[in-house]
Image (cartoon, rainbow, N blue to C red; front, side, top):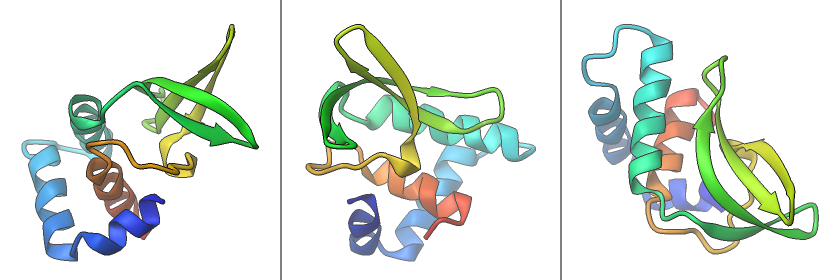
Length: 109
């Protein structure tokens, strides 16, 4: 679904969003952190999605030691980090455009 959202946001807007998120960043690690901050601030969490046919709740987003933005998915007592670019979004939550900007920055579309 994020790919569809990407299609609804023009490249100039995505470029502007990336510039906004990465202003004053000196390297790729800082840029990833800037994009993570925008996703964390704007993405309407929690929300539900389906992972491998199982409904899960996205409880929060996080950034790994290797600068990958992940969604922390919860079902019962089980938690799993899933790369946010791989997360299915059947009904995109408010703020999903920042995931599209992250995908654009990462070269994923």
